[in-house]
Image 1 (cartoon, protein in one colour):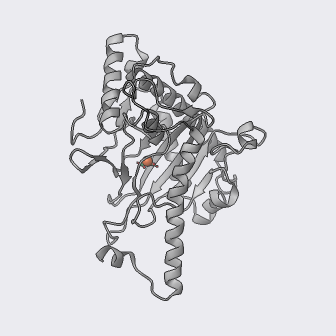
Image 2 (image 1 turned 30 degrees about the vertical axis):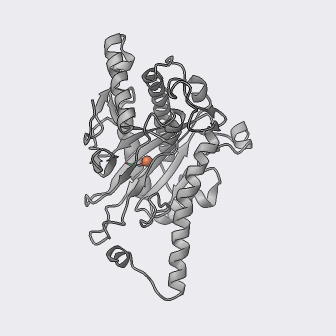
Image 3 (image 1 turned 90 degrees about the horizontal axis):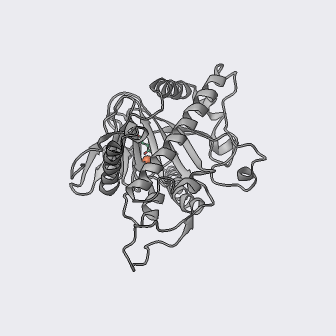
Length: 353
Ligand SMILES: O=C(O)CCC(=O)C(=O)O
Ligand SMILES: [Fe+2]
C-alpha cells in the first residue's frame, strides 16, 4: 500500500482480465489506495502491445525531428480551432510565476469529420486531425495509422480503468459506461529538450506543476526521467521512474470533483535536467462532453451536501484550458512590452532576484 513518501507503485493490470476474483480484488484495492493517496499509479499487464508503444514513440521522435518550418505548417493555432496539430515550444505556463515551458507538442484525437454532430456543434476538441503532408513526411500514412491504432487502444484501456475505478467505489463495474460512450479524449505527443545548464532552476520547467483537467490520464514515458509527483505528506517531489511497457495513470480534476474530492487529482511536473531529449505521450480521457457530472454515490457522507454543483464534462474541462494558455500569452505580452521599453529582463536575473 502506498504511504507517505512512496513513489506511485506499479500494479499488474492483467488481474482485471483474469477470472480469479481474489486477484481482481487485490488490484481494485491497490488502485483504491493510490486514488486516495496521491492519484497516481503505473500499470503493466495491460493489452496495449509493447511493439505499438515503441512504434508510437518512434513516430513521436520523428515528428519533432522535422524543421520548425515544416512543423509550423500544421500549427494548431493557425490551422484550426479544435485543438489539433503542432504546439510551439513555450506555449504554456501551467505553474504561475515560472517561465514559458520547454516543451513542444502535437495534438491528435478521434478522426471526427466536419459532418459529425460534435464538429457541427463545436464540442470539446472535436474535428478532423491535422496531419503533415506527404512532401513534408513521406511516410505520413504510417504515422496516421500508428497514431489512430495507438489512440484507439489506449482509449479502450481507459474504459477498462474506469471499470476498475467503479469497483474501487463499490459501484457496478459498468457504472461509467454511459459517461464513456461518445467520449472525447485527446492525445498529445510531447518533446522536452534538456534544459540548458545555465537556466534558472527555480523558474525553468518542461511542464510546470499542475493537475490534469480531465477524468483520467494515461501516459507513456520514454526512457528519460523527469516526471515528478507531489507528495503532500512529506512535501517532496517524487520521481516517477520510466518503466518499460508501463503506463502512468493519474486522475484529473474531473474525477476529483465527481468523487466529492475523495479521490486526488495531484500536482505533477516535468523538469528535464538529464542532458538528453525527453519524449512522452499522455492521453487525456475527458468523456462524453454532454454528460452531467454530479457527486458519485458513496462519496458524500449521509446527509451531507456535495461540495460541488453538477456540471457538464465540457464546461468543467474548458475552464482549465483557458487559464494555462492565458498565462503564457500574458507572459509573452509583458515580455514584449519590456523589450519595447528597452529593458530586457533576462530569465537569470529574474531567478536571482
Ligand atoms: O510528460 C509527462 O511526463 C507529463 C505530461 C503532463 O503532465 C501533461 O501533459 O499534462
Ligand atoms: Fe499532466
